[in-house]
Each structure stands twice: as structure tokens, then as C-alpha cells.
Length: 138
Image 1 (spheres, one colour):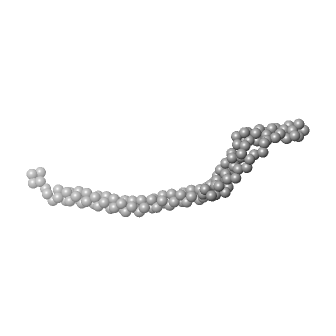
Image 2 (tube, rainbow, N blue to C red; image 1 turned 135 degrees about the horizontal axis):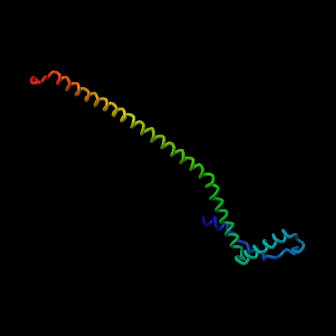
Image 3 (cartoon, rainbow, N blue to C red; image 1 turned 30 degrees about the horizontal axis):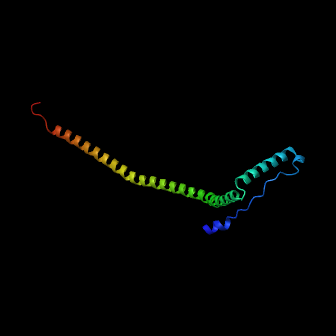
């Protein structure tokens, strides 16, 4: 890694900024652009006349491009895969819950029917016993 940085790090001294000699003959927009160029060049020269700032920016932009391009290509694919995984897990969860709830609900219905039959039998047997047993004093 250090070898790559040393190989790519090649600062060059900046030339002293100079105003264009044709500045008075330029149009208003061209003069404005020339003044902005000279101001930016003067500021850059004032901050780093050896060109270290320019090389630092260039190097960091290269690193940013190397990291951003895969991120822009890979990140959407990863998010798509995660979304698919989420939908599969949701589908499996719903299917499993349905597979568990269906037999439980069937058992509940069977239990209720058996309970109703038992209650009905007990009511019938008590009626039959009441009819068979007559109070002799009544």
C-alpha cells in the first residue's frame, strides 16, 4: 500500500500566478472568468506553492473514485438481495404459522363438537332419568 502511495504521490511546484496580458481587451464575462481564475490560482499558490495541496486533492479524488464506483455498483445489488431475503422470510413465516394454526383450529373445532355432544348426552340422560323416576308422593 505504501509503495502505491509513493508511486502515485508526485507533487509538482506551481507556477507563479500571472494576470493575462489581454485582460483589458477581453469581454466582461471573459474578464470575470480571468479574475476568478487568477484569484483561485493565487490562493492555491499562497496555500501550497510546492503543489502538495493539489497533489493531496488529486490523490484523495482517485481514492474516492476507486471506492465510489464499486459502492454504486454493489450497494443496489446487496439491497435487492436483502429485500428478496426479507420477502422470503416473511413468506416462510406466514406459511409456517398457517401450517401450525390450521391443525390447532381443527383440534379446537373437534374439541368444541365433542364438548357439545357430551353436554347434549348429559342433558338427555338427566331427562330420561327424571322420566323414569317418578316421585310416588307427587
